[in-house]
Length: 436
Image (tube, rainbow, N blue to C red; front, side):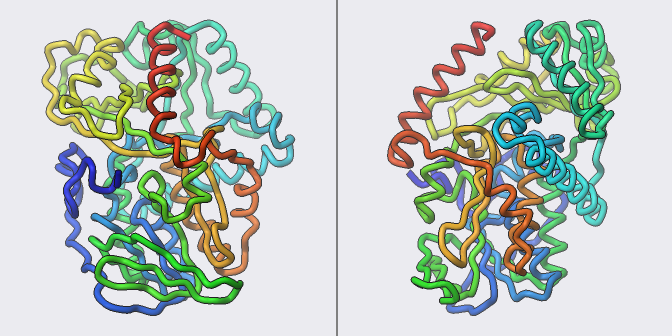
């Protein structure tokens, strides 16, 4: 099953609110014939676009190949949350990596936020401040308070505000949770406009972007310094370096990566503009995510539409009624919206790893890969593109720091990803419904 085409029409953005409200971007051409460059980038989401931009600004000849449109995948469909830190919290990182490495990983994530804010500023994409985390039980609330204190005392990050039950209810306009926190150093934005904006910057810097150019095979030289050939349906690129930035859509191009990165689907709906109705919902306008394994996450856009993601399925095919999958989760948080019309519903494919930390790898001597951002990719995926560009230029410290985080293969590797998806999503969906 090719996830690039099983749920979507070739070369078309999905029918999402983001596609309907995005800035216009004329299509880039399809790759035709043979091209020779310094670096070929596979994938036109945040990672690939950022890599192409930073390579071009460093003077490299770079080609970016995207099977559909830039920002077609998770980069143009996600919840738009610019989160702090890594996908795992600092106590997990310290236990696994030691305090010094945990601090380095935290700093990388902070630099990632700075980069996104900088690129969004260049591209004219507004960022709204604040991401809240809503907890479902006392242990989660206590843990959130512990992490906020730890971040302020040991990481120099005082921007996380712990919340009790009334605090979280006042902030989000729902009594579904018993506490949590809000990170005022995080934020939210229009995700597809960010991807389109970075594409414009990369194009302006001299990167050559090709859309509707599906990479189906890469042949690497057997030794360091030998060239690679990236094969598309209508042409090929011969290059000194390859950057893999396909995330959940990478397929079997790099088996070493595929064994460690599992694609999963997620679903989002958008309401009609709420106007002055329901003023209790997000009065200070943060984004929100809860503590379920299959996370509920939401925010208001500038027209006061509620954009709400959640719900699990056990198939790689999107359900026929996406709104029917997500609506119960939305109403579990905001029952007062039961009569509000949903104008959009869409699905997307992201990628997770066993430990929810990104998988940074070198599939070949001249090939770099970053994927598996596990729902925390807006900042880190964008920054990973810069890290890979720096590594190509000979400065690999940041890439190597991320690659040092172990990412184990899934049991059975890529061959068993589909049955694992079915079993795992069914199990964790059940746990969420039972309140664990």
